Amino acid sequence: MRYAILSDIHANTPAFSVVLADIQSRNVDQILCLGDVVGYGPTPAEVLKQAHARVHHFVLGNHDAVVAERMSPDCFNARAKAAIEWTAQHLDTKARTFFRKLPYVLEGPGFRCTHGHPAAPAQFRYVIRPSDALEAWASCAEQVIFVGHSHVPGLWVIGGSGKPHWLEPTDFAVEDGKRYIVNVGSVGQPRQDDTRASYCVYDHDTGSVLFRYVAFDVEAYRAQLAASDIPAKKTHFLAVADKQAPGPLREMLDFNPPEEAPPGSENVAVARLEDAIRTARRWRLGAAVLALCIVAGFCLAGALWPEPPPSMVTISALEPINPRHPLPAVEQNAIQAPEVRGLVTPDSPLTQWTVSLSDPEKQTVETNVRHIPKEKRGEYPVFLIASGTPMPLALHSELVPARKGMTLQVAADFRVETPLDGHLKLILERVIEKKAIPLIEHVIHCDRPNRWEGRSKVAAALREDGFVRWTLVGEFAGTVQVRDCALNRTK
Figure (cartoon, one colour):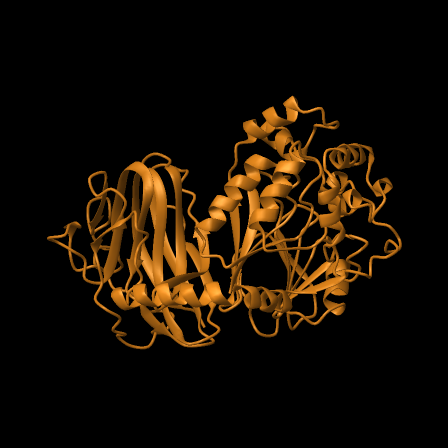
């Protein structure tokens, strides 16, 4: 099961819309919201309607609690209090009823979701210090805890040393002997040093957590804000957009948690995700049987190899799965350099790689070509990728068998002549039948022309036996050189 876990939408329509679009491309089964659907933003009714239609499960946020009259607005500073009181006036009775029924805690298989501190979910305390993290882990048994509230993405980790460590947002795979508190950041009111919305994708089957950042139309939000009569229109990410220096985090935290939980907060304290899923299954059984029949028909007609999206054309396809050998030691490269040199075409395909392009007339892939030092050619896979249009493309290595407990790493060097117009990501994928599941991914920042960037690496520990592959995906206009593509075992 793959979950998109988001928080703190705060009535920001432009941000929420692009995040939902991004989630749609991530093979997600369920969307979980960690609270604060409203507050600050100028479109609370529109965002709540959108969230109600798309999000599968919610927990209550402190802004939502004020609208539901489950918490006093006096816990906020003057700016936030004025905004949430305006919000409450622009929502109807149905909205208040909806928020009144939300739980403070959502329990999933091996993980827990709260808006604020899990030890006191109805008080909405922050998890921002090592002592906060220790208390959070002591309050529950789950290995992974997802929170929001502070709007700052990142994670606390504790292992054998017993000492909590704060890490900036980094994709990771859950490891035995460690526990995690993951702050998924904010969709509608980001407080990191850029203006992008953030959320996480959690794959329960593989134990991987991916941080996602999505740019949204800040000026559209600014225009909606200006057109409304909402008070206190200043906000952190607008200051960042205007190149103003951000203030300290504590100055941005505009909520003072109450010393005691509000009366009646225990009535709807906890919801269990598995119970909710079982209930939904009872109602959807007939539809599910029909859907399975349809899917089975397609599976019988299809090939047993991961297909690119329908909009992409596969120029060079691998043979059906044929594992070569167990993954070699760390000093060896598990993927081979392509045998073909020059432009990849249907008449000159690669034998160990798959190339998928949206528009073969405007997108090309060449191997072992100019700009690559001669001593590098043949030693590691090297590519020259050109795209005259910002449309999706993908490059996949052959599948490599791997065993449970192995820690794997994908790496490559990148060089551009001019900054790319678009994005590029290096991914370690696990492939199960026709489905490719990202274990970990790394955004490539090719923003320094005519220089080879340092090796971009991502690593993950496998939770079960299976097949993995090195993958590069992008949607850009420009040309990028790639060398020293590697898939290695590090443990």
